[in-house]
Length: 100
Image (cartoon, rainbow, N blue to C red; front, side, top):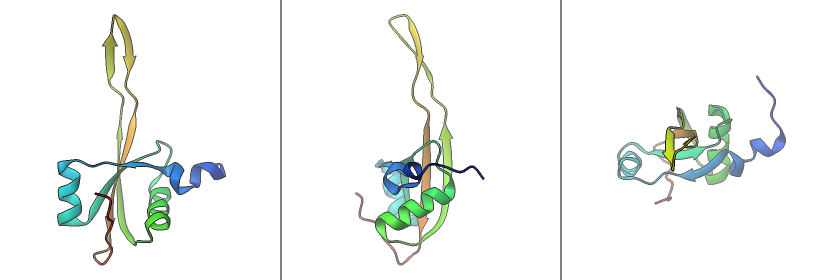
């Protein structure tokens, strides 16, 4: 296991933002799952600890997706969009988040 500096383990460094779309709203209402954009270096344990510390809830599972940046052209120059990491967090049935 790789050791990280203390700044990367802080909850507000791990969780960047909550993703609010029709699909994530459906997940939160029906399955008590919430979707967050997280730091690319964060692992499942970091994400679980960050959510539990920030909102005082019990996390059952964490699923992650790493999205590779796409190549884009603008005025003849080639660049790429940023790579993103998405976390889908399932909470205990008694716990709720009021993000939306």
